[in-house]
Image 1 (cartoon, helix red, strand yellow):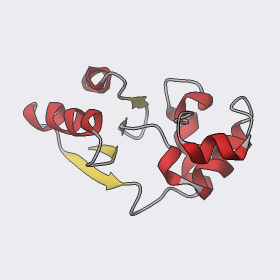
Image 2 (cartoon, one colour; image 1 turned 180 degrees about the vertical axis):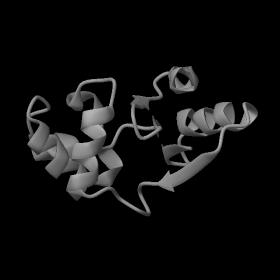
Image 3 (spheres, helix red, strand yellow; image 1 turned 90 degrees about the horizontal axis):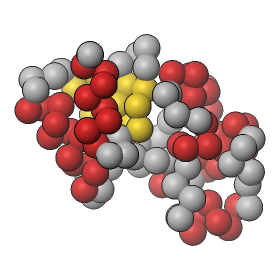
Length: 113
């Protein structure tokens, strides 16, 4: 089972979901804006993600810019995302062992290997 941290308003997120569904993959969709991750979940996600913790942040969002947080400090990244779930990069596909940021969406297909 793959969990997809999903924002249905995001075209990349919708593409990632379609890619998984087209391949018949069992997907649990988590709309992280409606059901935000807490600090413990983010720490666990950071341990599984194939990118740097800094890559979990959407730095173009006004909320991130207003914080003035340090992207290189994982705890500041966690605190920022907990406070402002909108700044979490999307989509993220997570199989419980590895998590991949779907930028581009096709990157998540590596979880199927």
